Image (cartoon, rainbow, N blue to C red; front, top):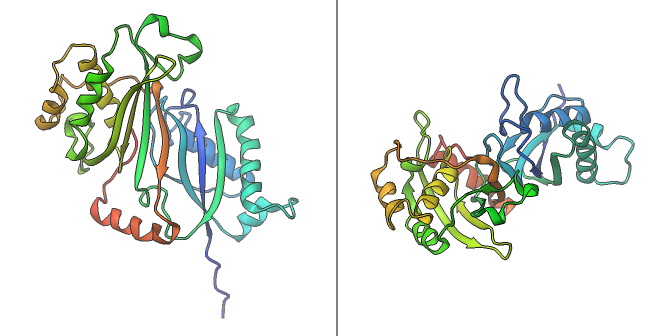
Length: 292
């Protein structure tokens, strides 16, 4: 009678990356991606070809400071990670060794912040309760800083932050965001925008903060584009709410560039509830496609 095969151990990794050198998160033939960089580093460390599952698939140039993924490591992979590192927790060794490989392969454009063991039912994508993004704008030439050109939109006209904040409130709650999404075949555009704000920081920069259960394709950048249209006076107050009600993507849809967008965090339930959350999400929206 053959011995039972041990169940792989699931690890959740938190990571950050500069999206500038990459054509987005997802693997694409012949193009650099964050996913390829991470999976290639895992292959070096574990001597296995592994695939990861990510919370939000970011677009070309989009950054992350609080991305989350999960990966399953079998006993051989865990042993390979810990070889010659006796006494150090596997999680610590995994982070250290992955970062050493990523430093060589990406010039530290990708950094693993932490790793922890999670239950088999945990799913970085489907267990998530929310994702949060921040978009940064410098709305006058006096605030343009060449050192921030990689993560800030240089906008030539001043923005009315109060007007933008009022418009954003019109989008809060569970809505069909078709007017603000690039629809995918047979995919829903219904999302719950749980929280949002527009603020001007002490540095004078305008930041749009958004949190939702998930974001459909291009949703964040299109919402910001609509807020900017009202903030600079090109559209009247209430226009963003009208666009929401129209439920159509047309010539009035404006999308801001991706380089000023950062995925800042992903929220999860307690580990003992992660599996149930994943099952509920799959049942409710099996076609969910998080990410901007």
